[in-house]
Image 1 (tube, rainbow, N blue to C red):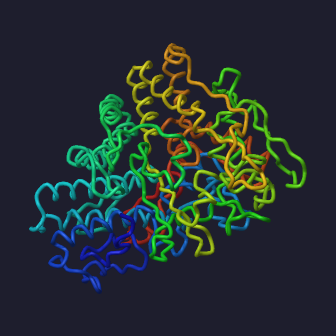
Image 2 (image 1 turned 30 degrees about the horizontal axis):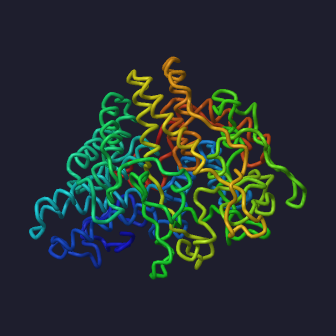
Image 3 (image 1 turned 90 degrees about the vertical axis):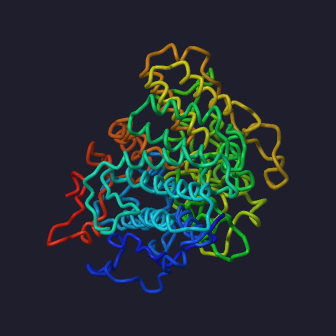
Length: 592
């Protein structure tokens, strides 16, 4: 389904122009040049093209990025993972400095990255609204298809607004009936987001003809997630139970956990764990790298002899690595994992001998973090410093979940640009995420036994040896395949039945939060999780204290509770909202 239409020019619906650059006060009163009139679009073909256009900006790419697609990357590697302490910006100190300011919470609304992200999300809102505005005029579409189209558009609008809400909290609500797009940010939009996902959940079919489109169960998972953020735990339990029991993927597969690594390989995407994913394509015959994952194009190992053309960003933190340490029983150190650090090769040249950590580890570490002496997919043993742009600045590790395989790069990687793009989907929600959100809802609603069951389902998958990383048959020729020897000392087990549930609610929640940290690491969730749990202040204070002793990039990093729970409203958008000398948009507290 990817990018049948990348852009719909004006759509006869002016796209939230109050939020786009270069708009004059009276621009909204004039017809858009080259706009397609309603009479052209108000038919089955036109409305499908409009809907495709609403899907097309899920990847955050468009003219609004100024060529810097990573600023609005939909996996939130900057806004969710780096700010959550999972990763450093990476590269070196002089490259993409606005990210360093975001990572250390030393920035305000004048940071252009926020403006790009804002525009990308409101572009999605406006395209979704265009579908909803024109749909009632369509006469040649059967009623069931009309309902399906409306439900998809509302699902997409719910997604875009969910992203806006968790980034900025108070944002303007603009829907298909809005005529003045210069709206204040004075309403809590959770009820509207909830209503959109509820409509989609109740009206979408279980399967769709195109794998990238939303179905009933993706909407249910998102509705449950919305309830969870609203702390409506009983409502969340009801919906999550339905999704877990009855849900299927858009292409008809019963929801289930697959081998962990299969979620991050283009050859095995759209599997039974894929609840809602942004479809990425490479080498599809279009010669268009924008069909691949441009948002993550900076995030590959880079240095002497590295097989990637750019750029050394998004380096996992030492604290994240430490979270994968297990004890002698295969369980995590929930409260003192930094007292059991993972051995690294910091300050060692690649020619200096190094033996990787021999202690017990959760196997998910080596599908998440590239570390010295361990197979880096099928690219060879990760050599350490030679594949790290500036080890002193951002540490010894490299990202891994977003990196394609060497053996299949002709199919799933686009190397036509200065930095790689690939066809690994961006997973907005996967089934493991659903299980852990359900566990959290169950624990808060009082069912600790069910919460334990869901957590153990995740840990049992991690313990399945078929999903582990193994050494190469021949280190010099990694494409010959893998041996039967695990790449590290993997020891992971589920909690013994009843032992987790037998503890109090807070202990169970702590285990759930920890499991989310290691299962969903580097997938853009962490910061938003920490904020909604009320743990961001303590967690990030600890992170800055611990990690700044290892690297130089976090100097001055400080998280202020309350203020930094949300990002600053882009100042450019505040300036555009001025009416009679007063801006309609209000800056978030603490940033004035």
